[in-house]
Length: 183
Image (cartoon, rainbow, N blue to C red; front, top):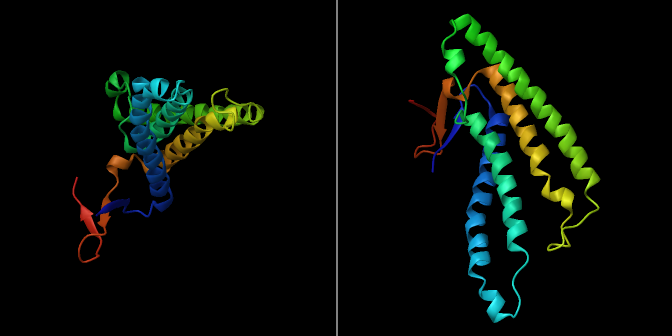
């Protein structure tokens, strides 16, 4: 199986991208069976009581899905962006507005990392009623982690440009050699 990596040696950003995409895919693939179990509710009739855990677990996975998937989408350039105003600007102003948007993103990501971490720390001693072994702070951990990944990807974009404009190479192909990938 072939994998892609930035030609300019962006291994750190590549690994963060793989990590956020991995957890995005894992949380997405777990939500459907958990919600299916919740909707089936066969346990109510077989065991005599319904399961209390599927809903909070599904909500937690959706939070992970949202924040880590958002980071992966930002890095890939597939996030939602309204470009009507910037497309009407001359190229020089377009670059200035792009840098301004990246700076605002960094500030927002920093705010969420700081206050999200404080939220996790302050709620760590509380537990969820249906999952008493899980601290509430753990359920909020995707908020600062996803924002940290997004902030690192914003920095990567500011320093190296968008990922879509960087050359890629494939490795793991038969023969084991690096080959440029055409876009």
